[in-house]
Amino acid sequence: MAGQLDSRVALITGAGSGFGRASALRFAAEGAKLVVSDIDRDTAEATAAEVRKSGAEAISVGCDVADEASVKALFGAAVAKFGRIDCAFNNAGVLGPMSELHSYPLADFERVMAINVRGVWHCMQAAITLMLEQTAPKGGHSIVNTASVAGLVGSPMLPAYSASKHAVIGLTRSAARQYGRRGIRVNCVCPGPVDTPLAGPLFDYKNNRETLLARQAIDRFATPEEIAELVVWLSSPAASMVTGTPMRVDGGALS
Ligand SMILES: NC(=O)c1ccc[n+]([C@@H]2O[C@H](COP(=O)([O-])OP(=O)(O)OC[C@H]3O[C@@H](n4cnc5c(N)ncnc54)[C@H](O)[C@@H]3O)[C@@H](O)[C@H]2O)c1
Image (cartoon, rainbow, N blue to C red; front, side):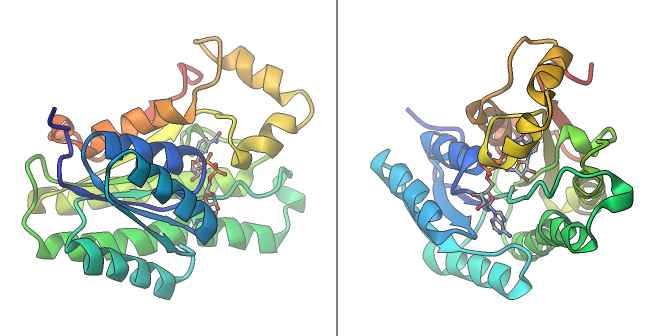
């Protein structure tokens, strides 16, 4: 049976774990070829191996999204292997420490911004430059960035993280307006808390797990696979009229 993304090439950052890994497998199930990257090359390769086992093509590339040269090398490797990129999922991110703003270490603020904002910036620049040279597939090229519900409201103990995700939404909206007429759709996903390695300190902080759960309209946390569903849908021709949208996938936490 034909998949929604047959023969399209999808590039994912932070794909050694969590949402990136789950999305790689979901993209593959829809017929996409995968460029699986992570700062941890071994975990990227483990995801790529799972994708290949499912019958889809995949390469793995080590890439630190905060490093522009590393991002350029990633996109270069993707083009060398597959000739184009139809879908970019700019997903790599870090949480940073749980700390009030007044005592938040500057070095951590800079690291969170370097990965979560500058990393998305580098990947968007590389993806858009390439997409502008290509013929758009049906429904348009797709860029999906990973923001967060913390990009829509304040997070008292995660001020740098929240600011970085607000910035990701700003980049998403701006690029969507700029490139919509040139065949590129740009959206972002805003997940609520999901139990991944990144979110460990958030869940473990005081009695946060219970507090966060009490906010959910749906009485549980989402799984990485439920985030992947939205990412793949946004990347597919089914979402051909969707751009510039920060989409919540949070079990109603912000309703
Ligand atoms: N888990 C949550 O509750 C939650 C909620 C909202 C948004 N997010 C966002 O989702 C994205 C994915 O997180 P996750 O929950 O799947 O976490 P995760 O820890 O499972 O995966 C994050 C991956 O990013 C990689 N990474 C970290 N720094 C990198 C860098 N500089 N360059 C390339 N890769 C790097 C890690 O090695 C890891 O494999 C992040 O942007 C995160 O901010 C997570």
